[in-house]
Amino acid sequence: MTTNMVTDKVFYTDSNGKDFLKRDRDYREDWSLVIHQPVAGNYYPLSVGIFTKDKKSEFSILVDHPTSGSNIEDGEVELMLHRRMTHDDSRGLVGPLDEIVCAKSSCKGPTVRGNYYISINQLGAGSRWRRTTNQEVYSPILLAFTHETLDEWTSSHLTMGTTIDPNYSLPLNVALITL
Image 1 (cartoon, rainbow, N blue to C red):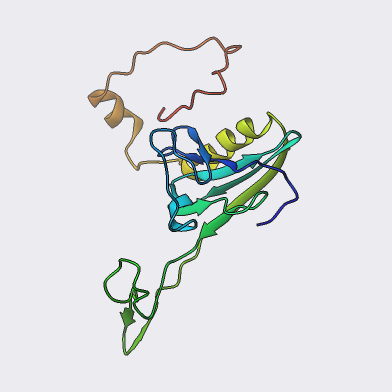
Image 2: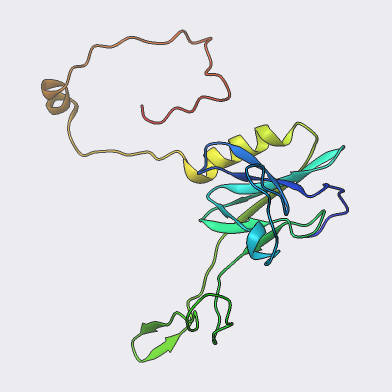
């Protein structure tokens, strides 16, 4: 995906879905980096998403399945759908990377599908969108019911509890996991 943003080689990828880490293309803070493979050396794993920003706006992409992504050119965000090579490229991988999925009497390469959630926000507003959309994608509300009668349930469970003040609301950075 290409934008006209001036990002100065900076983009952000998630850290196992917990927070976003700043990435500087072709640079490592801990050591002097010599670039031999500029594309491969700037790809990072994504559990949740990737974003980039300039002085006015933020461009965010959230994914619904683990993948990898990068910012090879300023203003661009690149995601890897699936890696497949039918021959050895002589760059370290011994042999081709050609997974085959066989079903019934036919064999073919795997089909990879997923959803991407894209947003363009004013600078500083993207964080809220990423957090709330991430919770909706990865932790949707799931209602679960049982056929058990109330009398059977109350006889085997502690039914005393406390309540929260009805005017109280959880902070935006807190998610209710179970109730």
